[in-house]
Length: 88
Image 1 (tube, rainbow, N blue to C red):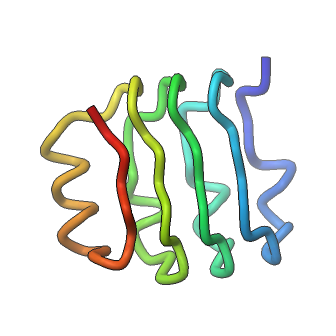
Image 2: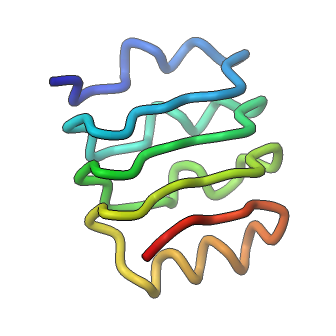
């Protein structure tokens, strides 16, 4: 299964990305995807949202059933009120 996003790090014009159900645990390669509008990373071992914290165009984030905790998601929501986050 897919576990490493580094090969797509240079694809900065991506607007929609669905990595749900993969083995991806790090979102670091997405930090330069400034046009990203929607990210689905549910059902993955993702642990941190820090790499996508400054993606101002991100409007939808689906990150349930991950290794994230409520505190990390709340911090992300506070910094990105424009983004609708699905987490439970």
